[in-house]
Length: 217
Image (cartoon, rainbow, N blue to C red):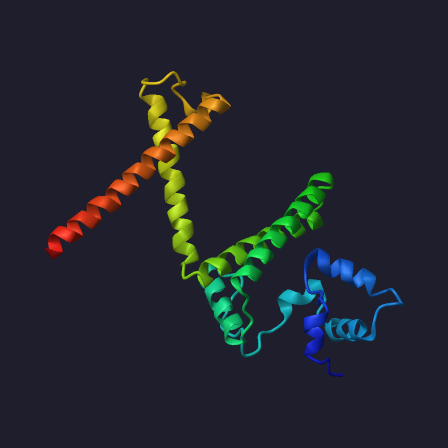
């Protein structure tokens, strides 16, 4: 039996997570349309619990989704999706990110109410969807996701390090230890460190631009 490709644009294909469970429950309803029944029958051999055992065909050969270098794996999968023209517009990616965040918040509330391993797996899956979508938006914008994440790590490292140094300097009315600060003090230190580092960055850009001009003249 073959299912027309146009059906995939009209109907959501249940593959993973909570959507899979919900869709399978709905499929028991006798009122569902024939195309949905066809899709369910087509996917019957690929139960969620067996997904990891499906051997790769041509497109996914050589890609290991368990690779510890997640960005390397992402880049390879993203290259495949682009090779089959499975791409989105910038507006569609933004909508997708908002949708994934909403789905994560639902999954997190479910886990907070009932801390089962199944609910945890669902919450983890939705967070992974957020990461993947954000990385896709970055790559679509010409940004290397790994470089962007590394830059953010460096930024947070520098800010917290500077906050700690301000506390240890005894030049403010804050406690000596950052962990002993009250909430309003931490916020003030965060904003001060953020501004200080931003000014330093702007100065660096300005000095670099000035040196470039002097070199070229």
